[in-house]
Structures are given as C-alpha cells and as structure tokens.
Amino acid sequence: MTINSEALQAVPDPSSQRISVLGATGSVGQNTLDLIGRNREKFDVVALTAQTNVDKLAELSINHNAELAVIGDDQAYSDLKSALAGTEVEVAAGREALVHAASLSADWTMAAIVGAAGLQPTLAAIRQGNTVALANKECLVCAGNLFMNEVSCASAKLLPVDSEHSAIFQSIHSSNAGEIDKITLTASGGPFLKWSSDQIAAAQPEDALNHPTWSMGAKISIDSATMMNKGLELIEAFHLFPVDSSQLEILVHPESIVHGLVSYRDGSVLAQLGTPDMRTPIAYSLAWPNRMETPTERLDLATIGKLTFISPDENKFPCLRIAREILEEGAFGGVALNAANEIAVEAFLDRTLSFTAIPKLIESVLDQMHADNPPSSLSTIEEVLVIDEESRKLARSLLNHYIS
Ligand code: NDP
Image 1 (cartoon, rainbow, N blue to C red):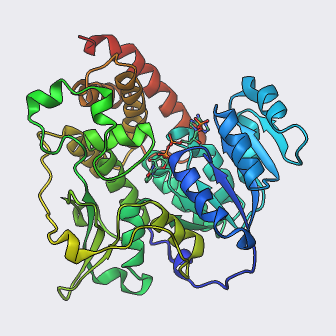
Image 2 (cartoon, rainbow, N blue to C red; image 1 turned 120 degrees about the vertical axis):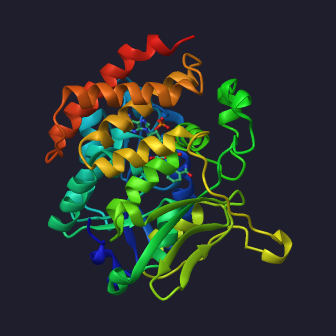
C-alpha cells in the first residue's frame, strides 16, 4: 500500500502537451477528446486506440490530427487503412501494436480501455515513465501491487480518473497520510436501488444499462447495477491511497453530487462535489496540478435542496460483499474476481445469464480457483495473465449451471 506521492508533487505547466488516449472510442475516451478538442493549442495527439470501432477511430484521428491510430482487431486493419487514406495518420492493428502505441513517449496518457484487456497497454505507458490518467480500474483490481511497484520503479505518475478516486485525490495530501481516519467512496446505487428483489430477479440488460445519473460504457453500467463497480473501486482505492481495507467505506448517495470524502483524525471531513459529468475528473487529471475550464453544468445546491446518504445493502447487492472479501484476502483473487465478472457481464448482456446469476457465477469461479490454487500474491504480469485466462475458461465452463 503506497500513497502516490510522486503524483502529489507539483510540476511546471508545459506550453503544449503530447497526449495519447487508449480506448479513444469509448465513453471516457470521447469525453477526454472533447476536452482536448476545446483546447487544441495546448495538446498534440500522439496515438489513439480502439478495438473494433473503425469509423469512430478514423473520425477522431482526423479531427484531432493524431500521429497514429491503432485498432486492436487485426481483421479491421484494411478498413482503418481505407478510412484514413489520404491523411497523414499512421495506421496499425493488433495487440502488439496497441502495446506499442501505449509505449510511445507522451507527456500524458489516458488509460481508458475497458477490462483486463487494458493491463498490458497501461503497463507499457507506465514503464515509459509517462503520466498516466487511470480510468481502467480493472488494472488495479487484477494487479494492484505490481502496478504500484512499476509506477515507482519508472518514476511514472498515476492520476486517478474514476470520479470517486479523483475526489479523494483532491481531498488528500501526502503529508497527512497518517492523519486519515477513513476514506468514503460514494455510490449512486445504480438503477435498481429502489427495486424489490423480485423486480431485480427479472431485470433485463436495457433496465441495467439505464443508469440514473451517469452516462457510461456498457460494462461499467452493468457493474454499477450489480454494485460490483463499487467493489472494484474499493480495491482500486486500497492500492491508490495510504489506508487499510478497514478504513475504506461505501455510502450510497443517489444524487451523485458528493463523489468522495476523506475523514481526518480531528473530526474534519474533506469532500469534492460536482455535477455527475466525467469531464470534471478527466479535466483534473489533464490540468493537474492546476485546473482548466470545462463545459460541465455548474452545481446549484439551492436548486438541488437536499442530498441523501444511505448505507449499502450487501444482501440485495452481493457483489459488494464478494469484492470486499477479495480485498481482505489480498492474494490472487482480484484477477479471478475481475475475469469472472467480465464473463458474467458479457453473458448477461447477451441475455444468456440472468441478472441475479451474475454474483452466483462469480462466487463459483472464486471457490473453484481458491480450491485449485495456493493463496499466493502474483509478482509478474505473466502470472496475472495465466490466472486471468484460467478464470475466464472456468467461468465459461460453469455458465451452463446458471442458465435457467
Ligand atoms: P467503453 O466500453 O465505452 O469503451 C471502452 C474502450 O476500450 C473503447 O475504446 C473500446 O474500443 C476499447 N476496447 C474494448 N475492448 C478492448 C480490447 N479488448 N482491447 C483494446 N481496447 C478495447 O468503456 P468506458 O469508457 O465506459 O470505460 C473505460 C474504463 O474506464 C473502464 O475500465 C471503466 O470501468 C472506467 N471508467 C469509466 C467511467 C465512465 O464514465 N464511462 C467512469 C470511471 C471509470 P471499441 O469502441 O472499438 O470497442
């Protein structure tokens, strides 16, 4: 557990920053490029990446004069090449090209690939000593200790982008690490906060994708509905901030206005507030240690009038309990948890798995992985990838047991 004290040191504001966006076509990627587009004179785009969305990647690459556009899916190379014919954008495809793009020298890299697929590219950016704005929480869930060690070996800077972690980052200082009582992550509660257990049992993908306050990609939207997202964020916070697992708390706050709180020994509580728009935490990581203008709606507390806070219900949302148990265990479970969750979410979106079978499948995978493997921590990315693959295979093989 290390505080990212490197990131807390001020650096001079360069006149023009070279930036890359991994996962450029996604929700975080496009919000990032929206801010870049409003401040063209301040940024030069090095590399943009996507997995399959050729048209959007080509459009963004042209709009932002990217030097390089990389599509993860090899099969899409010729389509991307045609879409960018006549431009100066260099084109590449495939997994290795993604990792290469991430390893190009840049002042700032947005890590916004979804899932464990982001592990190697994000690590490549860290190893270059780049400043990495981390949206991809799955990296820290799978390989938190490994990542934080790599950050300090490479003298890289890791800036949290998740709104809750950005809020905490804004409310904490390296000098007062020992003075913290607890860190609180707020949770909107997702679309099913007020649904009965029977209603939740019948929930369909379109219900779960209908998030009440945030507009996000499909995977994180389902994670928000199961509240696994908050579980993943607990693990993320554990690796980013200098606290024990017992000092991390979740508070349901349906308005999504207060994003995170730090409680200090003297009874003071510092929090960061703002309307729910990812461009605010992204802007904080882009301009850090300064601030920049954003077009986000301004907070009008008098109009909002009332803010509510509720304790989370782990019986109704068992993913929260499962993630907390994995955090407390501290071994390889994070990788298995994440892999099983990715397979379960995919199967729910395909309508193969019911909503309530998501935590059941995850628990089965974790039980089996714990029975088959000694409780060890993982010290190399290769070990992480092996457990990730084993857990995915197991989750796919267990799927049939949960299909009704
Ligand atoms: P999206 O699904 O909207 O976008 C994902 C991006 O990753 C797309 O560019 C996609 O390309 C690319 N991608 C998908 N699969 C792969 C792969 N196998 N290899 C390489 N690239 C891939 O996700 P979000 O933007 O919502 O989320 C991104 C990350 O940020 C997640 O880890 C999420 O938890 C985190 N986050 C998101 C927030 C949000 O508001 N959305 C808030 C806080 C954190 P393509 O479009 O071609 O499929």
